[in-house]
Image (tube, rainbow, N blue to C red; front, side, top):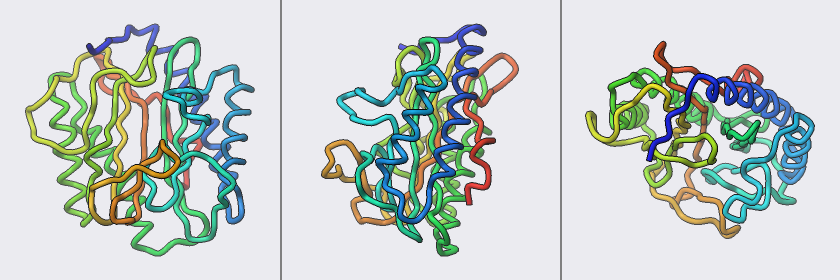
Length: 255
């Protein structure tokens, strides 16, 4: 069932989203050669608590941290550890916060120092896919319209969209209906309606779209070990159009 939100609920979620964006911007500043991913998680959790929120991810399905940190071929849900970032890595930072009873969720992929031009392109294309998807977020359009335009755009750039992971509704629960695929056929699936709040999260691979479970038991990586990137924002659909609840403002200069 898709739970529609009223204007007051969306207002509360927008407040949480602004806080989340600020937190992720602060975590992003700590990304550098030699930093352990466990430290990034500590920064994230301390900031969430400082702002009076609750970590959405910690304890969800047994997940042990407030932040997901996925490096290089890792797509999503990587568990923070003693592993240290190194020059030339790319790292996806995925974070959620519960604010006044409502969740918001967002992710960015950033470089550690200098990366090759083709990897910069991967990050740019994945982030741009979010904007491409938003062009189809209109009352009366279908979820398939979003997936179709994302797949066409990504494949035109020579990359692949991850198919076994997807975006989702969000609100009082971290994951709500509907699931929002980043591939598919136009005019299929549920239609967008006023009051829907959801996460768009394109995940893009430089190689094949197939995935494998990581040894930590939570994360997913590309099956062919090709590099991947992930960007995510929480979006509300109002009678005036879509509204980004988790702006990237505090995370600008991604690459």
